[in-house]
Image 1 (tube, chains in turn blue, purple):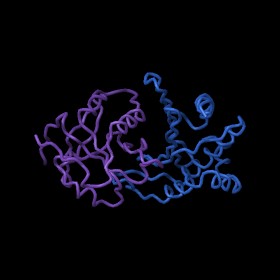
Image 2: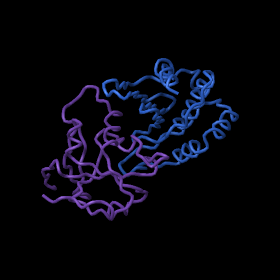
Image 3: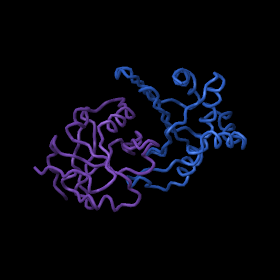
Image 4: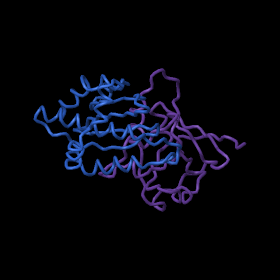
Length: 147
Length: 128
């Protein structure tokens, strides 16, 4: 992960966190519940997300909210949930389209990041993995164009 | 070692669902089928005592899937009995794929899942 991004995670302002709590209280509660998960949380051997991954989720949602606001939009509240590999998944279903971001961070390094942006036409499923520093451009713009 | 059995299209499998898998509107998130090895575990319904699954800590719901529907997605269900669970099965890909679309697969599994919030509401499994 680039140093700048790591720094961003570390200095996520209390004010921004408070803004997220005001905007998405259910989501913040869910994130803090995820932070408390133990190994084998799903009884299928699932790994709990690391604290860094939970912190990154706050940052990512905050950045998405700002990006949407810059376009005069509101960011719909995502569904949020842990994955079995220590990931966190953000999920939006909008007008029969879906957008998912899944990520995990361990020792300040991204482990996994993928998304899927299907439209109603099943042939257009788009799924890939990225390093965290390149997220935000094509796919995020596509997502923001939906909302 | 337990002997594997043939799994029929008409069979049903059950996947344990936890609070973290359920959306605000009660539908399933795609992480319901997230698995460390990308081979989600499930129970073959005709070999499992439903009450045993419901008795596990934190289980809030069971997802029930028809094996034939899983196979129509290009997946398969294989019997993988363990000493603790003779009903244990894995949902696997039929053919090796260099870049499987795991998230698409998970969403498709959600789309063919029936949800049951009470043990006695689950239809009985057909016996072969």
